[in-house]
Length: 173
Image 1 (cartoon, rainbow, N blue to C red):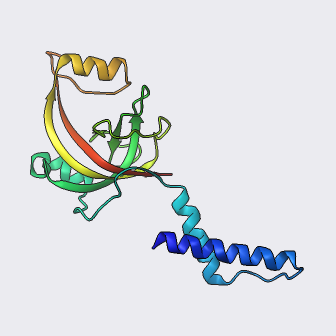
Image 2 (cartoon, rainbow, N blue to C red; image 1 turned 90 degrees about the vertical axis):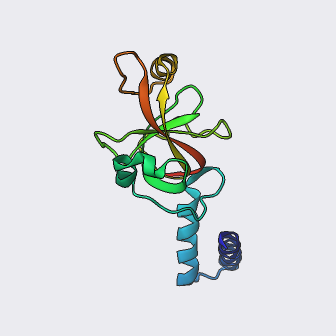
């Protein structure tokens, strides 16, 4: 559908340009302007991985309250990107909204795709599954020292993590 809208908008723009070159100065019809706006907004969205499907959309707050309830089930979640792996863009840390004090979740992509390293503070929508796991001391040290993650650790250096494995991501400002 978007491809058809984009093609229609392009055809309308080319027709208007041809008219303008002939000395005609007509305003574009309102419908064409609206289509152009949608196309411009769509172009500002960064997409990685598979398209966001029909999985149930869940509120970030609900997942944070009862993470095990959502573990292993395909869902769609939205929020804000807090930080991104600065080595490869292979993970991002997300929060319910920009500036949130708690509730950070690390999103990985199973090395199937990466996100832009400058995606911090962008809004996101992601499809995938949550998991609750314990990270080893070595994994925590790697994530903190080499990739810039912020992780609350146990006295033994391990950490519990609510993680999200994304199959597809959309990012926008």
